[in-house]
Length: 352
Image 1 (cartoon, rainbow, N blue to C red):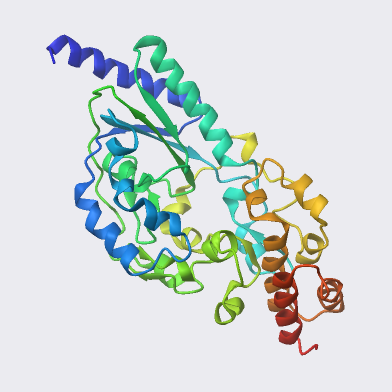
Image 2 (cartoon, one colour; image 1 turned 90 degrees about the vertical axis):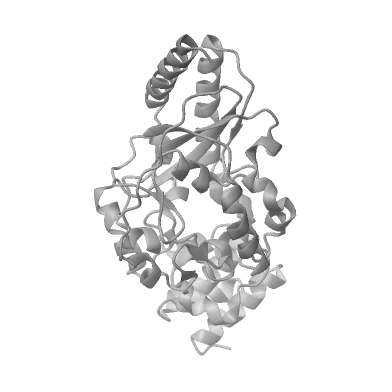
């Protein structure tokens, strides 16, 4: 590569950052594709069974750590961050009110996959208009070690909860643009967790089994979103009122005191999900669920698992007449999965 080529590519990177900012990304960084030293840790995590029933993770295996195998010809990965913390009802207030439903902050608005994919495609098109390139956009949609890639490109550092964070916290989404352009790469940043272990102590189920290691089988996000069947009984009381995902490790992180609210209207809460009661949401019919979660990340779990999750939360709620009546209304639900969780919840309240 000539000096002129290097200068041109450096200028292109600066323009890519400017285009990314105009598209709503809070940071755009460039990294390489060599993740060889991450492979042993990935295989150890899979061997321990920490992926639970997410069999696709085991099937993909080392492909996650080899971007150039996923898209032959890939030389660089452009990592893009988009802030999502919505101007919603206070998260801790919702968690402290057992009659209210807690939905992870990222899922209160429009499905982030759709938002980020569209913006990344626009970024790729803008690059291609200046320099033709082979590329592919990824938004949590393929076997990609996105946190590893992002941390190596200086987008932040991996926290002990395994999420990426920086000095403005961790309330952001990640998306990637694989490209065959030999762009200059960014340097990684130093981690700044130090001796802090607030996230580990805050996990309701003890899913962060060691610094930088999560056992998904105990993680509330996995239990309420990825798990297809029954939630293990021993873990049900620990879910509290969390019906879709969990933010406790992020809420505990001191760096999130500096997090900025997202300016994206797409991430604003829909259908009062930031303040709805468990009984309200448990009354949604299948049609209500389909309509009100259309275009939302919540839609993917389906009505049956939605009811399963809320039944557990109702079992953890105070035994008010409204709660008992709500549970009894689903005692003969057509789904055996829902019936079993409702029966458990009623038993928690001493009702047969």
